[in-house]
Length: 142
Image (cartoon, rainbow, N blue to C red; front, side, top):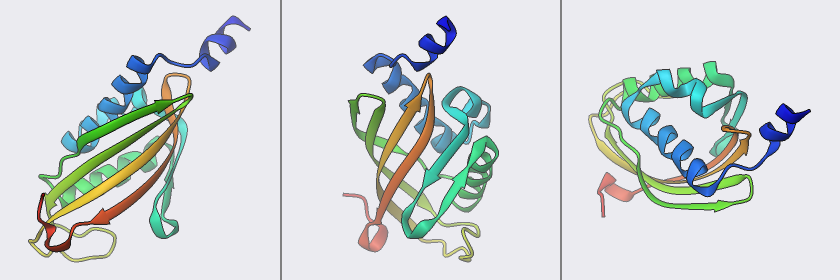
């Protein structure tokens, strides 16, 4: 009982920010060893156009695919908002398209994507994500 209560207790704002920062570090560096610390085993991600992936293995596959296609890709956090069991981040993801990604051949073009994600926490890990993306025209950073 006590462990269930501890698991269900909301994390502090600072702890949630720390987890979200580690998540963006994973995507920026490809450090897959952090996945179990950040993502719940039954994690589900919802992206535009109905694209979804789930579980830690799904996270690993998508990160590997993204890092292969955009090896210099990073995620720079612009804002973090915490409310209850959710964290919202606004971040910028630049990278050069050097490998196949979701069926698209490499273009060699530098792209910049503005992203906003809502992360739902269960205990100390992220259980669900909703993400919207917008590619900047010409790929230029502002």
